Length: 347
Image 1 (cartoon, rainbow, N blue to C red):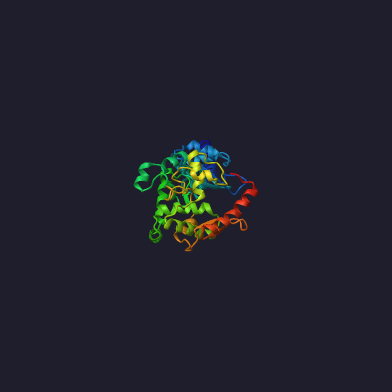
Image 2 (cartoon, helix red, strand yellow):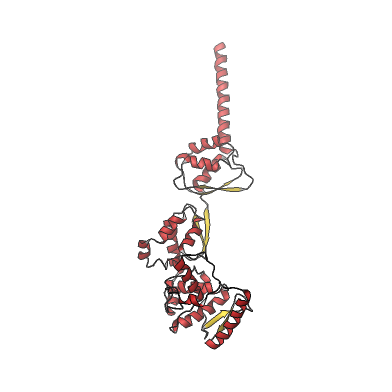
């Protein structure tokens, strides 16, 4: 009888222990284990990260790391880390947390525009995905890639069409570049290529001229008219005589890219540079700026008119006064020069 009581007690204790263990496992899996003031936090897991790196990233947000570790190991996550950008919500249990880290890679809505050079583009993109600017600029300027795709380094900026794109945060520099090449080919449809051919340009030349148009006017509705002026000059064998190309030439020569130049001087027009369209009839070697889509479309659908000149309109800021002949242009220009002198702008 005594032995039976002992065995019964042992059995009861075993059941109690099993219940406690089962409860611990249950709570480890299904009880909320994340806590922070916001509804959601983003956790970044770098490429090549080990399990400890993930633990360190989660530490500020997980209340009981021991229980998380238990479930992560039981579900095989500890030995199968996946790089990416993951959203975790407050109140998540360990099971939900592991599932989020395994399959919840959240895309980045990556944007870029208004970049002057490939270096600027690399810096902008590196702020949004894992690839750093050094790796990005290296692949942007890779000679083999450029040759295979019929770009020079000077033309390469034309391949990156400014827009919003969806990428995974852990996208590599090479993956970003290849995606942009596909987007470039998608943008330059057969219809657009046909339009370019009809106006005597190829897509890279359109982007180059569009970069000048973009720099000349921030007013989207005026860009087709400005593009029409440059196309009139181009088709008639004139030099473009575009001030933005001179500014770019000055920066290119000095490599002082942060220089702000508000006024082009007569001496600047003598700078011998392939980017100086006051000296050379040809288009610049490549874009002097990343033209947005409206500027590209402005060139493809430029306004047909008889204007060959334009200058800033001091009575309607942001817009320009257009002229068909040099005499009329000089009158408009004198008005602008008087105004800019009055403002005290010397450079």
